[in-house]
Length: 353
Image 1 (cartoon, rainbow, N blue to C red):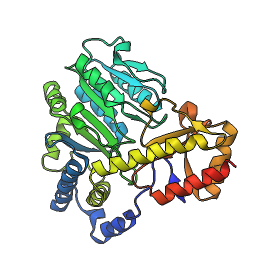
Image 2: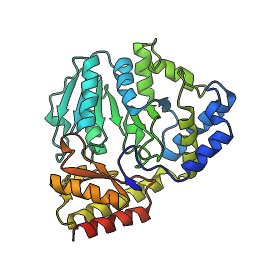
Image 3: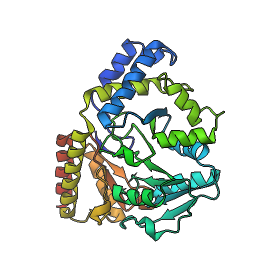
Image 4: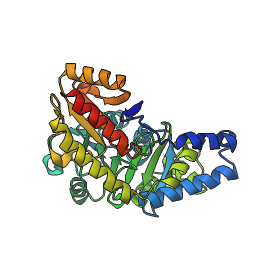
């Protein structure tokens, strides 16, 4: 089965060998306080910095999932309020979670085909964090850096937080423009689910120190203290970290991956309008995602194409939330080969005849 599911998604074929190596080298049973763990944890962090172009003074932390970061950010970096901008289900859920912890937090929704303009919204001057879903998996949209630059200019004291769950490891991110970047490995890293990454700027760490919140298993300050020795203050996904290390060893720098992913995305956006009975859900070229292509059709066609694709050995990503029945999604992640893309394009062309 060739999968184009948007998460969990295709894992690299080499992961099978990495799993066997982990078993034979007893990675599955080593202590997360052992020197062996410290060694490959350190190497993993170093590779993340070098392969993804993450600044040396940014701190990388392991989490259980991207969703866990919602809790960490609201509890450890915000005292009263954050403002959230969203056009899909995951950005909305992030806001709802933040509002549960801090009721004064505000959410600003916008249409998925609209370009976000910060000046259009009544944001309070004392907002502590501005939260954006850089790549909204549910709709297949992406917020451009220029939008967030405008937010930073208008609110220089606020932290800028971005959800990069479906683009981290797939496109080149200018980390210096953001204070908190989080995501997970089951999409663009080509790995099984169960490991998240939380990346913090010096400004974010300073804010955490100012608030001085500790006492929970995933308190940010406690995590930062432990990661200095390449460890965690909880039992982490040791196997997940090992697998991430192995994948990072064998993938190119993100600059190279970024070029390939964006070229493939452009080709997908040129290709899909030619398929009879289907169209692109995101018509505004400025806001289209490079890693998640959302295709719209009638409910009947969506149901039929997903069924026939499965019969042909192809798994398409389902629509999500309000778009569940009227769209399907195509993952444009690094682990998916050009040969697999051609198989799907051939199937779609045949389906439309």
